[in-house]
Image (cartoon, rainbow, N blue to C red; front, side, top):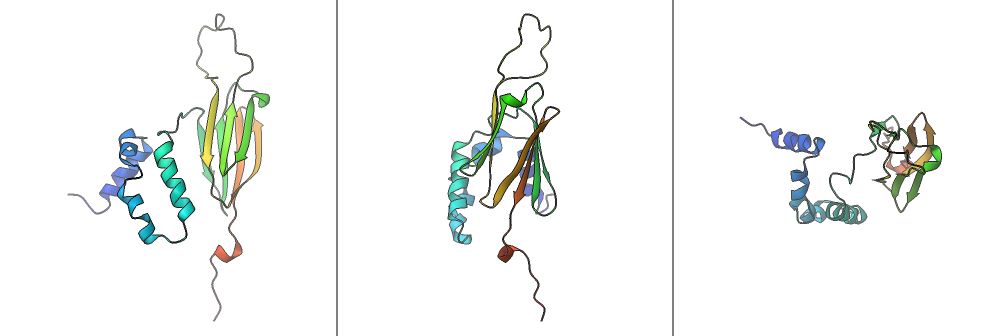
Length: 167
């Protein structure tokens, strides 16, 4: 027997597993998008961005390489960690542009493949991108021990924070 939440639960599991069949059925013709304007007010830009992402961004993201962690801390702070073993600081770039965060890497000098008996550490060029909300700022980016660490802050204006009024 199915409960009311089992469909939602299965959908979430499919997304977690990067099930490409779920994405294949999610496009701008999906009922969620066709009814969006009936129940949301003032989010036109969000709606247009979601349509653009669903119709134009490959799924799963072009590549899971290099792997990353996204950690949410208190007060709207996030830490994005990207594992870039084998890359030097000069071969990496972190850039914010048009509401997106881009992280790219390209090796300057490739090792002589004839000398490498086993190549288990990937060093191919990469470009990762993350869509940022309008109220999200990148505070800092650093590189240490083969990891890019990016500190991100979601700034919530005072008028948007919860407030209890004393009667």
